[in-house]
Amino acid sequence: MLGLVSTYYEGARVPWVPTREELLDIIMKLANLKPTDAFYDLGCGDGRVVLKAAKEGVKKAVCIEINPMLIEKAKESAKVENLLNKIEFINEDFFKVSLSDATVIYMYLLTSVNRALRPKLESELKEGTRVVTLDFEIPGWKPVQIIEIALPMRTARLYLYVKGVSDK
Ligand SMILES: C[S@@+](CC[C@H](N)C(=O)[O-])C[C@H]1O[C@@H](n2cnc3c(N)ncnc32)[C@H](O)[C@@H]1O
Image (tube, rainbow, N blue to C red):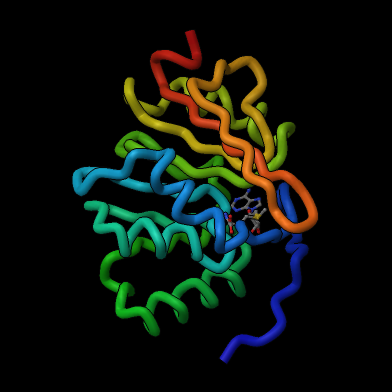
């Protein structure tokens, strides 16, 4: 049983701040998930977003997380929900993982990290791949849609980008 997990992990570029549960349906809808999709969460934390994508029935769901405690937590949740064999868990720096078969990418990171990831996204993603980011933009890319959601203490902002459209 994993209890407290530190929000900071050495080597992580962003602390762990989970996506709020009430945004999950909206994220799935914005990504326009299909059964043929390969869904990647870069820095998947406790796996809540990738678990949701797996429940929606995507072909492939990938949880990439540098913090081993969080990956274990994500696996534990997947086990409870009977989704363990539907998700690939990768305990690694997302800069080192190939994204070439992704069709949907989710990122709740920081603008500076999105900027650093941009060349990787531009060189590895297929045309048409949807990229959804929460609260932080990908500098230099044009979002095709922005959604604002009022939460109790703040307004969340979701950005949808499409490779081949947003990066031109
Ligand atoms: C803001 S949290 C978002 C967690 C999850 N995506 C969600 O929305 O609930 C960012 C996550 O990225 C992870 N992370 C930061 N830098 C990373 C890196 N270079 N490679 C893999 N994971 C990283 C952190 O450990 C943290 O869990």
